[in-house]
Image: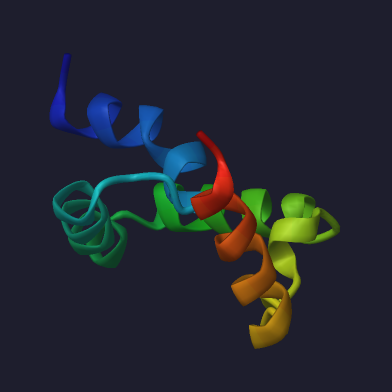
Amino acid sequence: MSGHAHFARQRTGYAVRCLDPDEERAFERHLGACSRCAAAVRRLERDLAWLAMAAHPALLDPALVQRVLDRVHELP
């Protein structure tokens, strides 16, 4: 498999942010030199933007977190 084929297979993983940190850095270096992958990632990100992962994460209520932790610690 050529170097480019390897990165082409990682496009979706990069777009959904599931590459490990080393793979992500390598892919970002590749994006700087590869207009085809950069365009493909832009399309994927645009097409996937409607998913919930495109929303900014909400902060959890600290009181709720504490109640959940208390219940977990009560489990046998």
